[in-house]
Structures are given as C-alpha cells and as structure tokens.
Image 1 (spheres, rainbow, N blue to C red):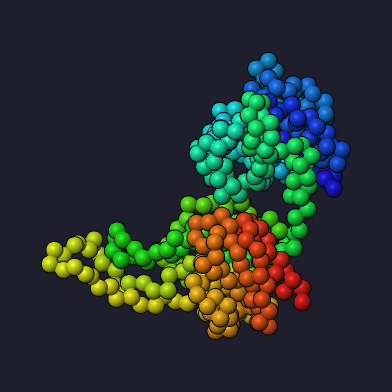
Image 2 (cartoon, rainbow, N blue to C red):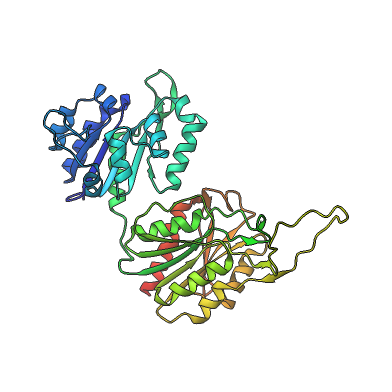
Length: 402
C-alpha cells in the first residue's frame, strides 16, 4: 500500500513520543521510506538511535554538524517528502507552526515542505482546551494541514479527557487513507470562484457579505489533491489554500471576478462557481468619504446589477465543459435552486439552505443538496466542508463518466 511513498516524520517533545517507534515500524512494514526529524526536547523521551534503527535512516535534529561541518539541507528534505507527519505535535510546536517560527530544524523543514502536512496533537487536557491552542489548530486546518484529532483517555498528568495522541495504528491508517485518495482529475483544468466580493461605496465603505471562502477553498484543495490544474479566483478572504499547485487570483469586486473568470473559462474543463458574488453595486462610487449630513437622517444609494458570471459562462460553455453553480437560499430552496439551474444553463447546482443548523457563512460545516438537469436531488448530511468538497467532486466525476 505504501511502497515507494516517502514519509517524513517529525517528533516533538511530548511523553507520547514513546509511541513513535511503533508508528515507524508500521510504516516501514508497509513499504514506506521513512525519515525522522526530532526537536531537541523530543530526545528526552525517545532516542535517535531507536528511530534510526527502525527507519533505516539517520535521524536529524540539527541542520549543521559542528564536528564534521556537514550541512543537512532542510529545503531538500522538505522537497523529498510525499507527506510530512508531525507526531506527537506538542502545544509549543503547534503554536510555532501557526506563526511561522523556525527556531529548530523540524520547524525549518516545516516551512520548506512542499508536501501536505499532517499533525497529531499530544498534550494535557487544559492545554488542549485552551483558547490559544484551539485557535492555532483551527488556523492550521484552514491552511490545509491535515488534523488527526487526539483521543480521550487517561493523560500523563492523571487527568482524563481529550489531549492524548491518537494511537499509532490509527495514525498509520490515516496516512494510508491519505495515499488512497483518488486521482480522478489528472490533466483537467479547473476554475473555481470563492469568497465574497466587496462593492465600493466610497474609499472607506463597501457593500459585502460574510462569506469566508472556505467552501470554495476546500473544493480547490480537493481538486488539486486529485491531480487537477486549479485556478482559484478568490475574493477577500483570510484563508489560504496552502497548496503550491493552486494558482490563486485575488480579486475584490464582482467586476474583477467577472473579468478573471472570462479570461480563464475558455481554457477550462470544469468550472465550479461557489463565490458569494454581490448582485448589486453602487452606480456611483464617491471619490471622497461620504460625510454625515446633520440635517438628514437617511442617505440614498442607487444600486445597479453586477454582471451575472454564472449566466454568462453558462451561455458560452461548450459541450465538453462542465459548469457547477452554488445556491445559498433562505426560503423555497429547492424551487429557487432549480430555477437557477435552468436559467443559467449549467450542469448541476449545489444548494445550501441557511435555515439549516451548521450551514452558512463562517461555519466549518455544510449540508448540501445536489440537483442535476434531470431534476434528481441528492441530499447529504451535515459534515465538515472538506468532506462536502469530496461529495461535490464525486458528483462531477460521475457526471463526466456518463
């Protein structure tokens, strides 16, 4: 299963490090080429000799050997790996990974890695539950890091609860699952829109919405992971796709997004338009900040329609192109989504209904229904947006195969 796969294992200073020799053994037994990097404090819990013996490779904890003068390039190691697994990932290391620190060899490799990074936290209950740790984990997940959630159980402190590193067998299975990801879209050119658009009122104010762009970004990540050549037209967002094989085009307004899509769509095999594009924009944008008038309690803004991106490409699409739209509705979801499906001339539409719990802007989860041109409706349960993205890709793949 893992034969020929190059796995870099990063071990940090946690009591859970004593379990890592078993993980190395499982990976090697399955044919993986395993190399290990350690933080200095990790060596207090497990010896480099043990991990070197089991992996069959030297263990690295410093980039420079003062005695021999030999330099171990963190850049080359980061390029070598197919997957970088940080386990156990201590609270300290997770915080440093979040803020881009590079004060040990493991962290310099982390910053240089071109492959996906998986991390398995290990720490005491209160440390794991602390707001700072939770925010750091959330940030890494949003950047595309693969999170192996800790299990609940007895901890080294004597407390019982979350924070115990997942067992080596489970981490091994998660690694296998990563490499089992299908490569259904190799050679396909995919265009995705994500995030909001901001329509300027004056140099200070704008009309916008609460979209974070996460759903579209997860779709972009999934396509990239399955071999597609991805162009992501991204409205204002604090989330990075964290994939080197995604071409990100940042835009602000609906007009900028329209122009970018029109540029790339003719060369596209698949277009997924998930962005929350403004339907209207101010007809006139003030050159200076609009001042409050003490003699008036109201202000009138004249709004005009923005270009309909989905309808435009739907009218231009060739038979060998697939176009998928998104519909976020607050009422009459199915009826409104079907109307959009046919009036825009697209292949199928993904419906989100805001009245569902856990659905909407700035949530990590989504609950969708996919409607095709045969009026067939496939409903999915509430799940993380990364998994929703895979449902969308599977629907596209099945459609292409027909």
